[in-house]
Picture 1 (tube, one colour):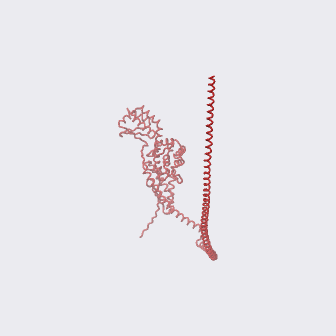
Picture 2 (cartoon, rainbow, N blue to C red):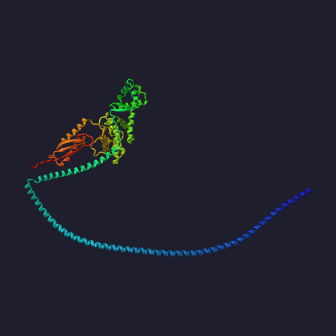
Length: 543
C-alpha cells in the first residue's frame, strides 16, 4: 500500500514536473512573441520615420534636379543660339570673301576677253593688209611668170641656135658631144675617187698600224715563254760522271739494251754530267728520257731492269700525255676542258713546229689571245680557250684526212665547245676576216705573232729564195711595171712603173693590184709592203 502510494506520489510528481516544464515553455514562447511584436512595432515606427525622411529627401532632390535641368536647358539653348549666330556670321564672312573672289575673277576674265578682242581686231587688220599685199604680189608674180616664160622660150631658141652652130663648127652631133662630156666627167670622177681613196687608205693604215703596233708590243712584252730546241735531241742530266759508266755497262750491254728497248741513240761524250738522246721520233725520245731518269734515280741499271722500266713507262705514257694536257690547261687558267681534248693537247708536246713544240706554241698563242682580248674588252677566258685549242687538229692530222683547222673544228664540235670557239679554230688560217668574229681575228693575229717571232720558225734556203723569185715574177708581170726589187727579206717590194704608160693617179691602182695578186697567189709570213714609184726625167743641154 505504502509502495503504491509512493509510486502514485512519484508519478504525480513526474506529471507535475512535466506540466511545469510545459508551462515554462509556454511562458517563454509567449515572452518571445511579445518581444517580437514589440520589436516589430518599434521597427515599423522607425521605418515609417525613415521612409518619411527618405521621401522628403527624394522630393527635395527631384526639385533640385528639376531646377538644374531647367538651368541646363537654358544654358544649352543659349549655347545653341550663340553657335548659330557665330555660324551665320562665319558663313556670311565666307560668302562675302567668295563673292569678292568671284567678282575679281570675273573682272580679270572681262579684261582678258577685252584684250583678246583687241588682239583679234589687230590680227584681222593685219590679215586684211596681208591679203591686200598677197593680191598685189600675185599680180606681180603672174606678170613675172609671163616674162620668164617668154625668156625661157627665147633661151631655148638661143640654145638650139648655139647647138646648131657648135655642131656645124665641131662636126659633132649632140649624142657624140654627150659621150665626150660623160667620158671627161668619168675621168675627173675616177681621179677624185683615187685621191680620196688614197687619203682614206693612208689615214686608215696609219691609225691601224699605230693601234696594232701598240697591241702587239704590249702582248709581246707581257708574254714570256721558254723555247727549247728539242726537235731531234734531248739532254739528260746526270748526278755525276760516274753514272756514265754505269749506263754504258760492262762491254756496253746496258747502253745497247736501252737503245734496243727504246729505239733511240745514246750519245755519251765529254760533256760533263750529261748524256744526249737522239731520235727523230719525239715519243720514243720522251720514253727514253723518262726511263733513263727513273733508272738513274733507282740506281739499279742492268738489261732486265732496263726492259722492265721501259715497258712500264710505255704503259704509263698515256697518263703522262694526259698530265701534259692538264698542265697546259692549268698554265692558261682553263679548267673545264673535256678529258679527250686534254689528252690531245698532251700529244702536241711531241709535235714540233720550228724551234718549239706545238703545245708550247698553243700555250703562247693562248696567252697572247688573252692579252689582246683584255685590251679590246672581250672575254679573256674564251680568247685563251680559242688560242689553246686552235691547233688541236695537229694531234690527229696524221691519222685523219684534211687540214688541221678543219679537223680541230670538228673535234671542238664533237666535245661540245661553243660555236664561237669552233668558228675561230676553223678559220684561224683564213685570210678573209672582214666578217669574222673578233675572237677569230684575235687568234689569227696571235698565231702569226707566235709563228713569226725571231727563232720560232726555220725556213729552208731554197724555199726562201723561191718565194722571193715568185714575188718578183708577179710584180714584173703586172701592167706598166718596168722593174722590181724585193727587200727586207721579202717584207717589202719596190716596183718602178713606166711614166709614159702609168699616170700619177693610176699608181694607187697598180699598188692595189700587186697586193691583191700577192695575197691570192703566194703564201708568205706576216705582211708585205708594196711601194710603187713613178719618176719622169728629161734633160736638155744649153749650147
